[in-house]
Image (cartoon, rainbow, N blue to C red; front, side, top):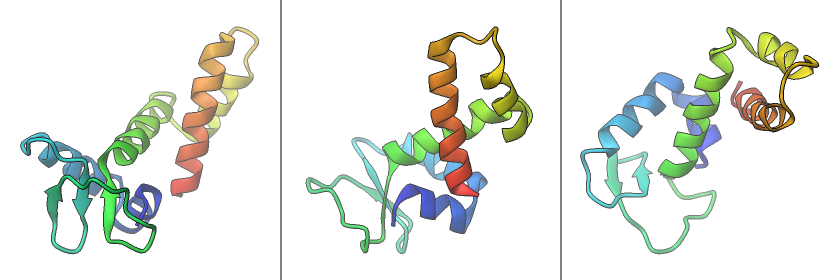
Length: 104
């Protein structure tokens, strides 16, 4: 299961909860969805495995928070289209908007 599917199925609140709980486990990089445990694996899981990458999950949560700082996806898009927004900010925000839209 990839992180986007996890957020679609369980929601952003659960994703934040998983990330918070992962801080209490030493050297973990995946969350086992079925058993609700954290572990470290040497081989990247396939899409059919019930693993969620914590790195990917954090990227989604961070993207959602960045977009919501603007109030909504529409407001974030308006900010990107502004002539006063720096190009590097536009690029970063567009990536965040894309991630958020995939999770909806």
